[in-house]
Image (tube, rainbow, N blue to C red; front, side, top):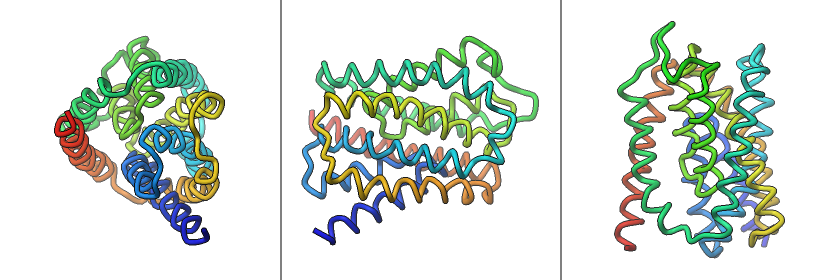
Length: 250
């Protein structure tokens, strides 16, 4: 129906902007897919496939912040791709209940990290941008992104912010591309082996593409601390919601 198509495109637009600004696309789009009648697993994999287009739009919109960061993105992108493939494989062969129970704690921890560790010029951890710890961290977050994904961008942003001596908008741009690579590999797995609802992917993807392109312009106009604070507070709210859903269901 035309109403459903327009509704999904609108959801994708909002989620695409939200994804590139505060890393919460799935918190908008996943419940919307459930509301449109998709079963949970189908909603999860359909959302992941459509999210691929947010990454395309975000990369196009983040070109000023990504200038000169090609080598960094390449190093981290390999770790993200391997992690995304691992997470997607786990989702397809294991029940998701255990990971759903852990997800609220991961999101809450990452959000608190953003609140408690404001960026200071020249002060980074995780061994800096060339450290092995950063690549391991990106790999682990990418497993989460491929497996469950909700608010995975917040966790990725927190890990990158702890290691990169860059303004928040620059960290956010790297996060958009690295997270998109993890998501892209997972999307390939799901497209081949998962119960993807392709009728929903189309309009949702169009909205994601436009929203992902517009999002970096919004992030660029926010002060660095505002971006971090918004991501942290939204992440804590998401953690509470995920926790209520997971433990009440248990």
